[in-house]
Image (cartoon, rainbow, N blue to C red):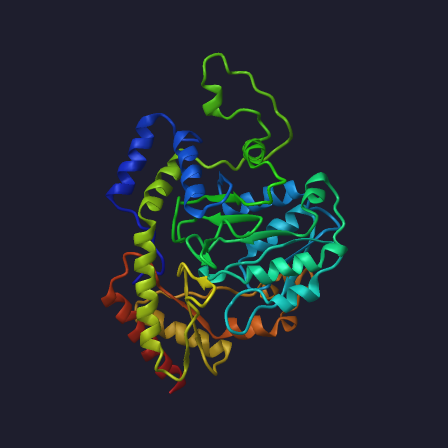
Amino acid sequence: MLPFSPPRIDQKTIDEVIDTLKSGWISTGPKTKLFEKKVTEYVGCKTTVAVSAWTTGMEVALRWWGIGPGDEVIIPVYTYCASANVVLHTGAKVVMVDINPDDFNISIESIRKAITPNTKAIMPVDIAGLPCDFDAIKQLVEEAKPLFTPSNEEQRKLGRILIASDAAHSFGATYKGIQMGAVADITCFSFHAVKNLTTAEGGAICFNLPDAFDHDELYKLFCIKILHGQSKDALAKMQKGAWRYDVIEPGYKCNMTDLQAAIGLVELSRYDETLTRRREIFEQYATSFAGLDWAENPVREDAERVSCCHLYQLNIKGITEAQRDAIMHEIFEQDISVNVHFQPLALLTAYKNLGYNISDYPVAYDKYSREISLPIYYNLTNEQVDSVIHAVKVAYLKVMG
């Protein structure tokens, strides 16, 4: 079976992890700090805090911002459940909106209609690694300033709705030539095993707030928040006579480890190579499907956006959800792994039980019902890509005639 998205693990990765094991620093230490610095340099943001996962990073960021009961956070219905769960964990209301018909990203007009005086944050999701329309979102939050009522000092300092980018898919993507991570107020990346850049599990919070915010102080504060509110991490406590620490607040436990950072440092050192290969695979798919009247290729780039090609989301025209599932079954029968990204949240039990209904999101359902994600990863050969293309064509003809 051709796998869907295995991580890129080779001898260079293994050697770096072994070096970390031998160093004595396997939790947060010098390699984590170096990884944070390298991420900051790569994306061009003001500071970066490495965390155990996108999920923990975004939740800590939302809680710092003051999100809680009575507040609302706008997200697309077309996303992974983590986008909603971090908001629900704070006690705030998740406001789900529909997506664009021409890509899989959040609809600007749907955001506009959803903003209320209770809206404290908007969480755009760069599905498949293609950035959202951030200038339009920034314009919306400027227009909504008269509605915004701050509830703490940080909110007063910003004076508007926070743009907290869910960039779990889009490390290395650009918007108007700017790397994701330096576009929104706060950006959270995922470095999960299936992502373009992996640390096995892990993530990063990148801060790019206005100059009214002291980013050096933000870095120190978040390092405390992600380690139980403890004033010193293990690296700091190892200095001579520096054993004593305080607990400033009841924080969280979601720091990245040096074992994770070791993998990330290798991945980052060759990330341009990774992106080049993923774009080659994307174009091989796009060229092969371009001449078929039933195939609808995803967007890789346009005048403002360049995707990092995290996913290849093929839409098939004129089919039902059941027919899509049948086509996927036939692809699997040819020993090719495919997937669906994503089931809109309103289809899932947890959110249906909260009152969300898929009938309110017709574009998302239509895009989902016809979507098949094809394998795309560094070690996928051109011959294997051809096998995927062949399998899709055979499966379509078998199901649709």
